[in-house]
Length: 287
Image 1: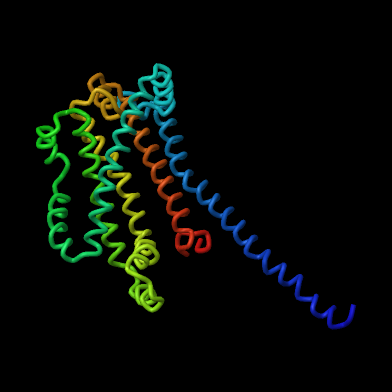
Image 2 (image 1 turned 135 degrees about the vertical axis):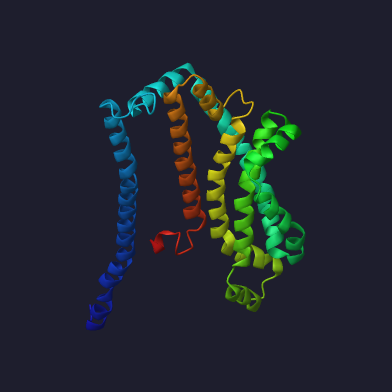
């Protein structure tokens, strides 16, 4: 080997080390993310432990707030009889149907209003007026329209889901960086290519934020819907338990709503990480 060959081979370990650095950095990011997940559960676990201690020592009576262990036993009994799973499945189906219906309509309207000032003039004011009406004020009219069957419940969920998705879709389209639009024009992109490659990806963070808000709103609307004329569902289970002063069942339904909310938000955040892997604020590179 000549001196020149030996000199040319010297930078290779440095290059290998440079390639290894991003991998080590990604491992540190993953470890840090796991630690933050663990930290996020410390407060809920401590709250449950304090709640259990207060209930067992008599500071909180079972009629006011039963112990978590009693709520867990109640959940096990209802699950073994099958009633809890049936009610949970019914509520999930209602929420899913309302979410798909309301989300699809809201997304289409949001895109239309986001791209067209004429559509904004025709649609947006009416949407904002309906958005300002509380669910409870609409409930008597919705019962007249749909009765107390499944249609009433799905309609209320769809109505609650629609507004966050509509607003965030419109906002996301309007907030796309004008410099990116100018770059697309310089590159000679057609209108269709601009929409697919620049506008919709640029609006996606805002759209997914609307999805996260709408998932929470869906359960709020479903709780209101299931308090009227329901024969199954988590809301029906809570109302039936209230009639018989079963606070353990009422607390169980509240815990179920909380767990479903956490699970739905986790799915939405996973969707953000997958669809926005290119974005520095959502992908692994920026965290």
